[in-house]
Image 1: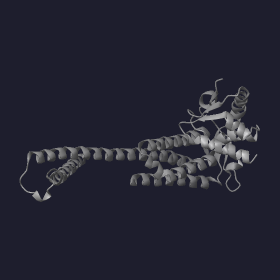
Image 2: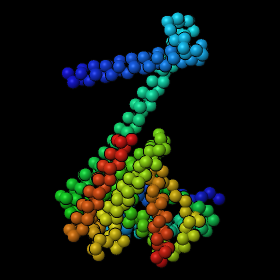
Image 3: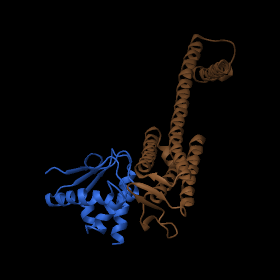
Image 4: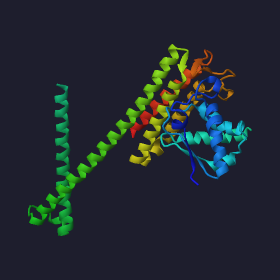
Length: 112
Length: 213
């Protein structure tokens, strides 16, 4: 079974916005609830990886990244292990986004 | 006029350099061929054989090749340094512009801010990758400065785009975001200014260190 791919720039927006829906379009909250969570659930169900492509966007705010991925643990009650097992990140343009995401997930897991 | 003087100066420098290379190679070659071919340096005198002349000619050619290689590598280092400094200047320009906007206005576009910060991060990572490709010692030498610059950029990113307590400064939320517009809070504007100054200072420090290499 082929892995699932979620390309943020192509499938969501080239210009991701802020943290919450109330702050404007293309927020981290919107991305997480409408795009990320359904794909993660599908990937877990099928037993494949979900490849998240971060390249191609205009840039991500730390708030967007934290809400999208830290929120998976805080709000959607995924475990850190589940996420580490299923998510694969691709970020050639700025590899430090991957470190940031992992740090936010770790932080959310410790403060859950 | 200045261009002509520069060209003459560069030509003179070139002549002096090549003369020094040829002179040194003649002396070294002369001594070496006496030592290794005759194995009798005490014979140093005016009797020159065909082998000695050939050795000197080969020696001059070798010296020229070596000088060319050294000059090329020095030129490459200069070009590399110029490239890195140019990239850092481009990043510095982004923050100078952002600083100007923050001083002038109380509202910023979130998308533009994301784009500016994202662009600077991508530029720095491209430069960092390039450093590893051209010479791994660059990364070892500049790691501390690079990491501190990246962390200052992340601090600014949080201050400008995060409305939660995650980025609160002295208990105040730094900014309000409505319809993807950032509204700067006057009480925390100074701390945003401080971070912007810090970023520019760290860029400057990195530039100095690259220039010193």
